[in-house]
Length: 503
Image 1: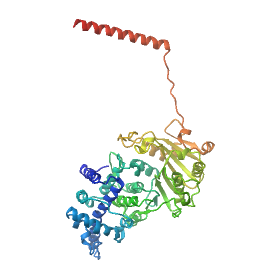
Image 2: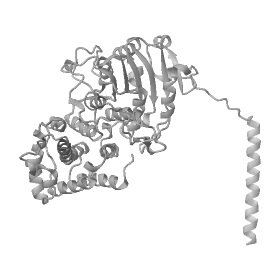
Image 3: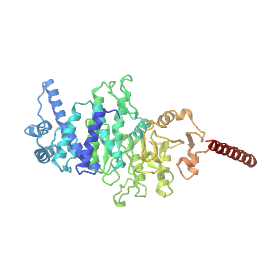
Image 4: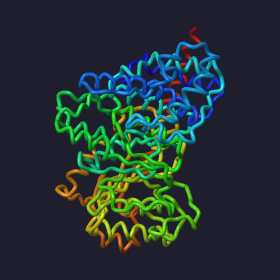
């Protein structure tokens, strides 16, 4: 991630302050940081709107009308004790209750929010660090990077890495599905909104002049301006009608909203919803679905949505069926699943695979190594890519060995890419290549063979392993070589002893 060292240092310092200040729950800490960042950002947004209105000769009423003391610039200079009381009793309730168009995105989900920073000194130090970051003055690119780096700390030791999908894996999946400007994109278990943010950046990159785009060592794109999007209606659509996310945890909803706003998505449509429950009724709404749903979750059988036909409480199965329902005919999906989904023998496992093959076009399966989610989970996973509607003729498999990081608990950076560029390249030309050699990295398997194997979709069922024949020397030759070596050692020892006698 291309952030200046001093900015990274400030974010690291912010984490350290919260940790040493008694807030050891990382998700809770980042939520409280988000509130402060939003307070800081809100004033800048209000000032910008006021200047824009004046330039057009239009009237403008500040959201701080009658409550100027809730401005960040007003209270940031208070003493520590006074600041804590003021923010807790005045500024924080203010952002929970503002109602003013796009600027209330975060506030909409603040109903249950609680201000938990316990110490005056911690609040004052946090405000100082956030102020020094000058988030409001940064461009959209850097604002997003700041928040992404803040979120990335959830992936470091002791900071609940299970909340985040590795960003290079997300980018790979977005590249495979290839969303565009007219798509409606949904993540039904959005977490920190990584799939939605990366989809936005993927679209912007498509419409940015190639000479402007920059790529850092981690493979992340920068300076993606979307300068080729010249129609204001297209921008309006991107900002207000393209990105939809759902999560059952309102904390994650607030974090994902902040992440999207700081990446430049002005009005993301994110809501607190359990998309597996009876209360969720959306169907046939989206053209793209991207997700990494909870693996080992389960749901009360009585609360499972009636539209879901699988007789199971396993969320990793139910979410895949939910995604099928969310898609319009012709819509595309990429989803991470544990390997068990591909070969599980229960009726629900088999039924899901049958639906994928017979009611969808199962485009491809990328088998990923078990170290991808270490140190938090060692489970082997795969990416399933499918299109809703029609039926499958053959399935493209790819055996991914490396993702650009070591596959041990340390996940040390190697090149940040591994097989990913090769996966994307071969997936795009898979029909033209039509690979059939099952000793290679990728190959097609016809649907008839998959059916014969009980709808098994594990790559190990179909990949052929080539064993090299090793020619060993005859035993008598090996014995002769050992005897010769022993003689050489004995002679060497005699020479060494004679040298020691001479001295």
